[in-house]
Image (tube, rainbow, N blue to C red; front, side, top):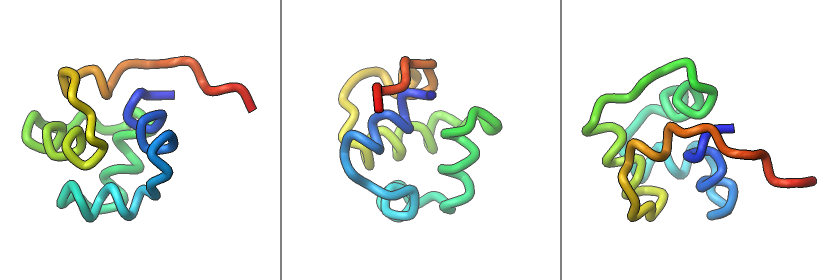
Length: 69
């Protein structure tokens, strides 16, 4: 799972809510989270802001361990 999805889930936000806050289309958030789309720096910065992610926005694209169920 990518860190952006992990952050979104930990924040309790839907893809639609993150998309609205980041001024992105919901399908863009979906394809970013699935690793099928590499966002530009502006898109990534808006995504980081929507997720209240204060680290380097590029880190949102890193693979992380899935949280245990």
